[in-house]
Structures are given as C-alpha cells and as structure tokens.
Amino acid sequence: MPVYSEKVMDHFMNPRNVGEIENPDGVGEEGNPVCGDMMTFYIKVADGRLADVKYKTFGCGAAIAVASIVSEMGKGKTLEEVRNITPTMVANELGGLPKNKFHCSNLGAQALNNAIDDYLRKQGKEVKSREVTNHDEEEE
Image: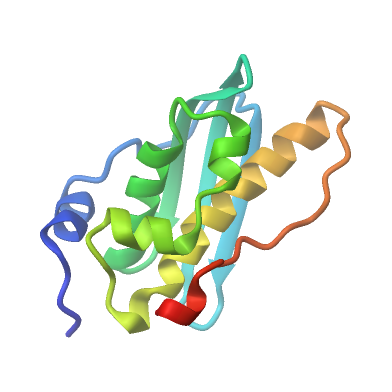
C-alpha cells in the first residue's frame, strides 16, 4: 500500500469544493482508463479569474486528494495562471505522491484545463488543444 503525506490524507478525508456548479461557464473531464480514475471540473469565470471551482471524482484516494488540491490551487487565479499548473506543482503542493500515483496529478491539471478550454470555446475563442505536461519530468 502506498505511503501518503499528511496533506494527501487530509484532502482525501476532507475534500474541498466537491460538487457541481449550476450553469457552469466551463466543464472539463479527464480520465485514465488504465486505473479507472475520472475527474470532472466545473468552473465559473469572472473578470478573467476562476471565481468558483467544483469537481466530481471517481477514483482512488490520490485522485480525490489531487482534485481537491487542484480546485484550491485554481480558485481565484487568472486563466493563464491556472494554465501554468503542472502535475509536478500539484504533487509538490500535496507533499509528494508515490510514483505509481503520480499520474493522478496529471488528471487534475488536465481536467481543469479542459474546463477552461470549454469556457473559451463558449466565448467564441479559438482553443489550441494542449496537453498538460511536466516541464521538469526528468527530475522525477
């Protein structure tokens, strides 16, 4: 069984921002068919910032903790700031994740980015599809 940090356990046992936003400005999903984890993020945007972020997650404890921390990391930030959240930043914010659970941090960052893409499309803006990647993966 993986060893989780206190912060991972806290976000798993007491997840923040769980739920759905009625009439969201954007919705983004991301899943991993290999492990079965699935995340859906709902966002409200005001003045170019994420005014509210909620999510639903189906998955392991690490996936739940990741969705919870990503929702906190994104709330109140500009869309561009949210776009710069990397899986490594998510894992670091949680005090680390076991190697076999690191992929969960990618799901959270990608699902939130997908919600921003959805919002931008609804605004009539062109969206270049983008994968959330680790710019410092070699360090892992």
